[in-house]
Length: 162
Image (tube, rainbow, N blue to C red; front, side, top):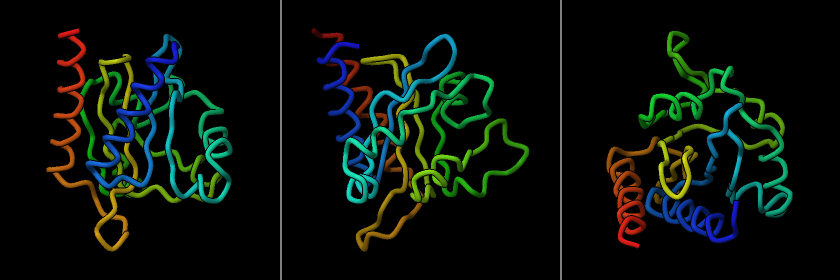
């Protein structure tokens, strides 16, 4: 992965978090054996363990295709998921939330907006915990979902124009 692509992904993640008021986010790279954590931002973890420490905690483990993860589902199906409460996903869904990272970090995932990425990489953009004006965690709104999809579309179109 070159520096220019990583910078583009960090900028894209920051912009998506900004337009949705997301507390955290991750970009996964799609690989043959699963999804690899590529870039991550988490303001709460960065405050408690520093930016480098939070990135290290979050990027240690890849997500194998065999795991019923939300990100793997989005990568395979190429469809966005807007999940109001990660801990309340129905058992009959083809994906589930693994609280392992929450337990490891002390962070609490609630709402998630997870969308497939095609540019600048083939992967998944995952936003975590939309915040309202008071700083309380709320579900991602339909407007936030549309804003992210428009942002990704604009990025892709800009790249196609060179």
